[in-house]
Amino acid sequence: MKRITRQQEAIIQVLLKETHPLTAYEILNRSVKAVQSINLSTIYRNLKYLLEKETIRRIEIPGDTPRYEIKDSQSYNYFLCDACMQVFRWHSKTNVPLESQLQGFLIKNYSVSVYGTCCDCKR
Image 1 (cartoon, rainbow, N blue to C red):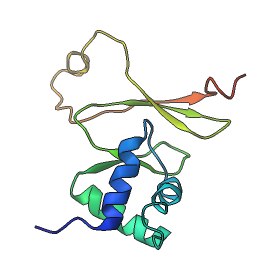
Image 2 (image 1 turned 90 degrees about the vertical axis):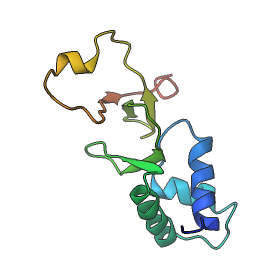
Image 3 (image 1 turned 45 degrees about the vertical axis):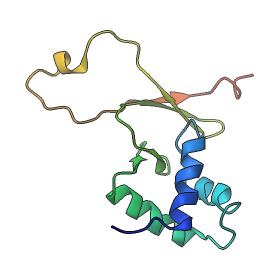
């Protein structure tokens, strides 16, 4: 079993503290406080490793930079603010289970992306 590195621990701690997915650059800017010598190539290398180990997940929103968050058992929907480019997670409030809408399919995960202006930017 491979030991977790200081860089991986810093990335994990950064993602645990956030309520929304982060880009590699955002992870770098927050991780440098814990590991001063960390750089972008180290971030990408460790993100790849953490993805392979299924510790984190990559969020792909069309037209936006990939973002990362800690992987958990929940499926999320995402809102991309067109003003500040921040991505927000939200849960759908529909009471109709997805499985009943897609009978016969094996659903492993899902996400919905919504675009607009967040509460802070619309003021």
